[in-house]
Image (cartoon, rainbow, N blue to C red; front, top):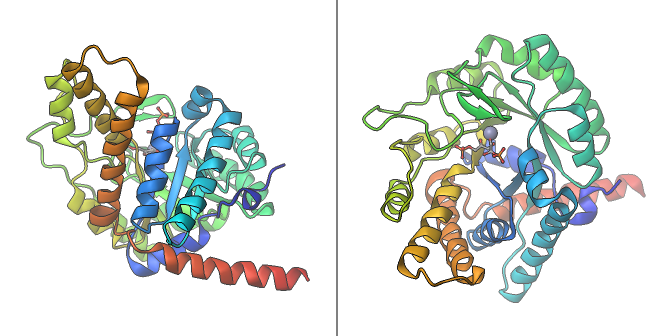
Length: 344
Ligand code: G3H
Ligand code: 13P
Ligand code: ZN
């Protein structure tokens, strides 16, 4: 068992408490490779933002779970060195399992140094979802790992299962689910969806903030998570299609609506597809301008830079997380101090 604290990660408890109180959302960005991970961590360091670096089951298989764990640990070390060299304060980083679909997968992540796991039982009937989630919480809390549960089903591809339409979270279920399972945060379905195809062009995308507000009324200040929150940058889609790609027309979640959600109890916003589009656009542009290019550093490097700019802008303009790291670090230090005093 490798405990996440020995790797320099924090769980999400303090981040979420500060985010709910101050009205911002912590970015939860997915990574599968070194360039994405560097862009995420360096953009968050540069904007003084806390961050949740998240890993799906697919990412674990793609990058190899052992290598991925070492990369995540290395990212914390890189952040510390960059912070020291540039006279910056360190930022809190949580390592999170995204869409864990089984008890065993959650156990494997907890044992290998994850500080937070999602158990996604949303495709099960309510009772089975609650029972599975409770089981994961019981184990996770023994190690002070935080747990995200989910109620309601997002349209799109989730856990490699395609759902045709949304099943919105039923506000009348949330109190029972949260108290019965002991989860630390709850992902809800209010009209966001996974992937690059969310709304048709010409539709006016609207997330159901009314459902969010009703949930908040029933579980005040409880940390809420939004999945499927990419905004599908149209300039990236156009660049991909101009340079030989074929991405169908679609629009994502308007950034103003995400900003509004982040001001409420939504304290974690998941974004993956926007990064995939920005990265692909940059690589395609380079290949179409320089078809003779074959050094991966010459196309992955600029793609990493484009990603870094995108994440920094999201932190500043959409999530409101820029500049929030110091108060989380201070609160975290206080908790660490009382833990040490208690153990003396
Ligand atoms: O919610 C899904 C995330 O975008 C991860 O996607 O399962 O293809 O890695 P993935
Ligand atoms: P997007 O596909 O909208 O980026 O959502 C990502 C996500 O929810 C990861 O869990
Ligand atoms: Zn998701």
